[in-house]
Image 1 (tube, one colour):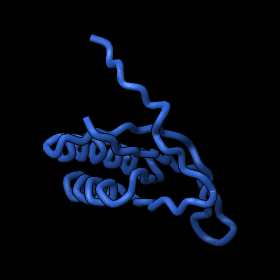
Image 2 (cartoon, one colour):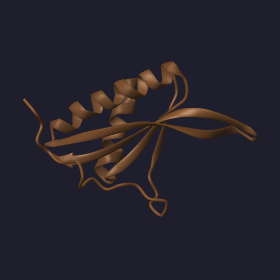
Image 3 (tube, one colour):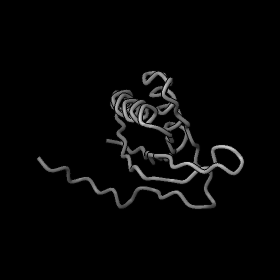
Image 4 (tube, helix red, strand yellow):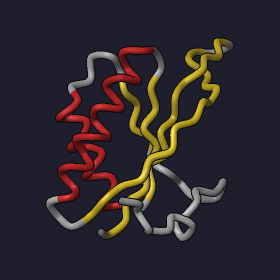
Length: 107
């Protein structure tokens, strides 16, 4: 079955918009992070979930999946778009992070 919903109406983050960034470490418990994602999405229409490293990206991915189930109980769903971004980890040290842009919308 094909999903006929259109995502073209999702609000795109712009430079003028302050989008919350949830930073994830490999030690972040996925269920707790999922609760933070769901809470942030109830307040904002779009958030970033950002992680550096394989284990942190894995935790972030699990948390987004769990957050989707939390929000479904309220008649809400989410869309995610992963991307790579360069971040300054410490002064003069740049690293590549995975940034998952997450939007919320009603079912």
